[in-house]
Length: 431
Ligand SMILES: [Zn+2]
Image 1 (cartoon, rainbow, N blue to C red):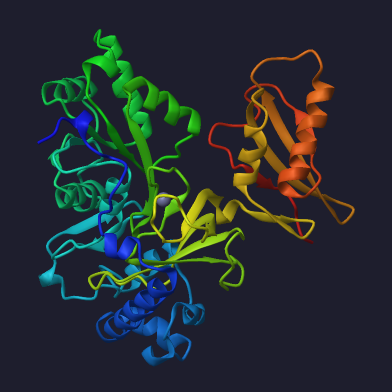
Image 2 (cartoon, protein in one colour; image 1 turned 180 degrees about the horizontal axis):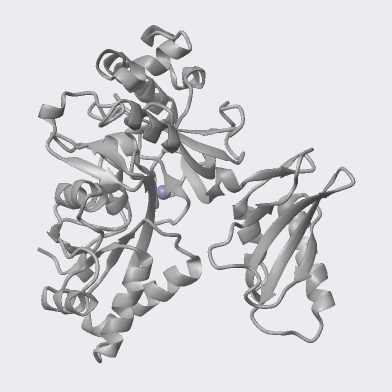
């Protein structure tokens, strides 16, 4: 086995025939699988049958991804309601409960039928594209209890690549540092903040993360990964960190490749970007809600609304993968709103802030005066500055550039914008 350093981590594919398939062929492939899962789920999943029946659809009406528009979107709250009315799985399960291998419980709580056999592609594709290779000794520091992520998805996917997993789970940072050192582990799976904890703990123990540890690749999820934190961690450990995106219910919906060029959509999912109000599909480049469909027969979620906003691109990626990509996650649908008829979303508030390093925290507040929408940016600065007027003008220009709507900047004292506050507060009343 080559040393972790000597491996080629930048070329190759996990499933070459699918990952490099010409886009037209991919559409045909996805349409064929869509027809298959709709046929299957209509027969075996009560919830899917009810969903199609509720709008007068039969499986033959769904021939291609474009036809998905006809099917209502199921949101997480709908899932909870369905589970309450038809326990335990809301009728979504596509096999009898006796055929399941595991049952998972996600926050909500939402009960999830677990795989008899795990065959999902996305996470393994993501790990490989991010540089994981056979023989990588890897700590998996996601939580193994109740939720499906660590055990079902990450553990199984590492195994499919040929990595050796150490199921460390959450916490015990000092011991995890020791384990990394003792096994000369090269892979990390976990949250970015836990990787930072590991770096700090290692330093506290008198170790240099780059020299004394051998981490080369990191697969992170479940948290936002600011570029500043990514480069800090990559620098500290001398490793490559790539992120993935998915939800507990519908799993992997995007992964970064070595080129760090947005998130490739796995080849066993259909991802639509839709207008959150109408559910209609939007063309690439437009901001909308991520709605996904899986081919998983055990848990056939058809048109699941994630509540997350993103943009799709179909421009080719230099890595050679031909799948469309989600450019980035732009916040939650319930935090997006319209100001003077224009759709504004939390990702834009972050984008404005990222252009001005002096900003510590920011929040947009939308109000209505004399039947006109007004938007104010409440901004906390890292430190007081001598000429706030100039900065005010510069930020207001950024707001116009990014959001296409005028907004007024208001500098507020530290602590005014609460921790975990919504990026956009809508204070309008409609009477
Ligand atoms: Zn790529």
